[in-house]
Length: 404
Ligand SMILES: *Cc1c(COP(=O)(O)O)cnc(C)c1O
Image 1 (cartoon, rainbow, N blue to C red):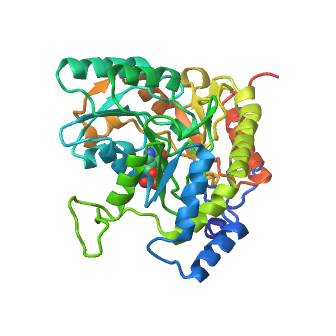
Image 2 (image 1 turned 90 degrees about the horizontal axis):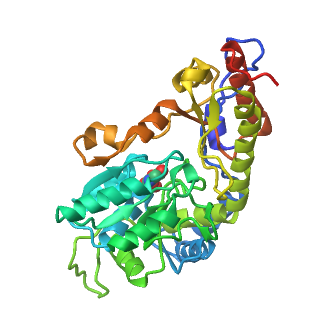
């Protein structure tokens, strides 16, 4: 039993339908840690390498780089820190424009703002990832007005890779570097490439609810040695390599600790299994919810790429079902099942009101109709069946089960 199970175990709840057994709360995406993590963490602890760096950090960086197929990985305190240093490494300066996808978590846009740069948002296509046509428009517009963007930050939404066959040539045409926000897509593949290996650099996150976790952490991945070295230097207060403390630039305290890197090594060793389990869960939802319902679809589900199925989401077409995603989410919450809306697009956020935006309807539609279902790799088969049974009762009540 994991700690998250322990804290979420509650006494019997009163289910409002007799057919649904009440049980412990099912989380959206809890950490999946166990004996291996404990062993690695304790070994690092007992080695005496508590802080600030150490052999587990070096080994984790090497294993991560090998896994993704890049030359360098820099372990950092969060994915957000990795985005920040990646942008600085690409030369993003105050006043610059940086183009990113509106359909993302706020961290992507926040990191752009930390550089004093201006996020320019573009809409997504149906799978929630950056629309190359809107990207092209945004680039042309900015260049025409004399403000060539300093970087492009595509996001692999919910683990599914963006359309790099189209995005990378556009970036090359305009000579703008690409920093991929792969925070959600570690373990996914885009054609023959591991996610996190495309672009000038990419960022992954090891936050608590991501596909693998170090409780908190992230990394910058790149083939560019200069970029990796610069990020490592900035992450340790930009200290010059001399004995007396000397600093020529403002740095940050962003390095990943050796203990957390040890945790990361254990998780990385299990990554394939974690991905496999999430893919199984998504397949169950596909076969047992989406396939038997009129008016729901599995978000971003096709077999072109082998993604990590970080979060499984369904889209509810209210005009066909007569209910919306929020109502289904509320029903599941009543039955102690955690769900969440998809990311609320950045151009709708008060903090980014007034930002430049290209398109918007597609992301707004996805936000309105999408619901993330419990997807964590710690879910037992019984947990998955309980989610399906609870959804099925709701669909039955609303008359949405398709005749078989
Ligand atoms: C989680 C996430 C981040 C931030 O990672 P942290 O490690 O939490 O700082 C950035 N971008 C996206 C798309 C994310 O999902």
